[in-house]
Amino acid sequence: MISNGFFPEIKGNFGFGCMRLPMNNGRVDYDEFRRMIDAFLEAGFNYFDTAHGYIGGQSETAIRDCLSSRISREKFLLTDKLTDPYFESEEDIRPFFMKQLELCGVDYFDFYLMHAQDAENYPKFKRCRAYETAYELKKEGLIRHLGLSFHDEPEVLDMILTEHPEVEIVQIQFNYLDYESDNVKSRRCHEVCLKHNKPIVVMEPVKGGSLVNLPMEADEILRGLNGGSNASYALRYAASFPNMAMIISGMSNMEQMEDNLSSMKEFTPVNEEELQAIARVVDIFSRLDTIPCTRCRYCVDENQCPMNIVIPDIINSVNEHYMYHSVNQREGYNLFVVGGDKGRASDCIGCGMCERVCPQHLEIRSILEQAAELFEK
Image (cartoon, rainbow, N blue to C red; front, top):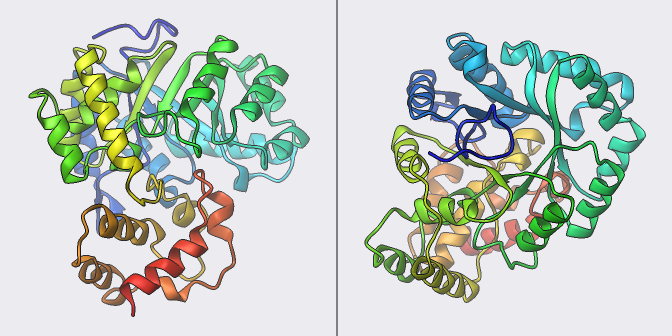
């Protein structure tokens, strides 16, 4: 295991993202989560990441019930975030923060991030003096390190870091598919962090699973390396760049945990042969008409679609329809939509609430129209 080289309290360069925890009948599977926590800690890692809206509010309480209530506080690090929908004024921030501490069952956060910063919500954070309030909480010992997570143009990130040099760490979306993408611009956001000499936390290194379940042609390329799993190449790719303090993976079962640990416990950067293979995989994706959804579930968990439409699952069905040229996606769509209690794509009322919270800035209403055309007619 390598040292992350930036914060001595962080063990290794691999973190447990608690946005996609194991589920059982709509609730976090505590038994499985506890097993995964224990395996993660036993492997020598200690960084956990959550936010108030993750899994419809279940993530923080699951951390309390499965982590902080069982494990000594000095044995783990915990990151939480200040998220736009949960405050409207400066006076709201401290009570919300204290509520988060209580929900997580801790007395302080090791890292506290201004969440999902972009050109639209940053003015609100400025008006409410969110950064200043968090810095006061840090001086009181309730926050150890102040940072931000980011989803926007690199120029916006540059502006925020220029205005707030007190920020100690930046969380960005970074993976080989988004490195040169016009949507996420991972490379250029990484360069801004280097310019400001900020350590980086990587989110979505496997792009919500998109870099695990690859199209057949791409899958064959990586398997031809006779090495690790598809996920392992994505994780190691992200960790191979400068200033990468932490690679966060959201894992939903013990199998994923064990695979990720095997890749990161004895981390080695990607080599030239692997980089060439990854470039070929990117080229295959560039020829596919897929939607860059990471299945973060902000559109349903933090916003709660008024029509109860399972937007990430529908987008996944559309992508699989095009990636695998599958004619069977209608059956899968009917299984979790028409045959269940969820809204259909055609039930969308066009309110746009989902689009306002989407970190990928997807035109979700148009996508739902496309899904209805594919699967309902």
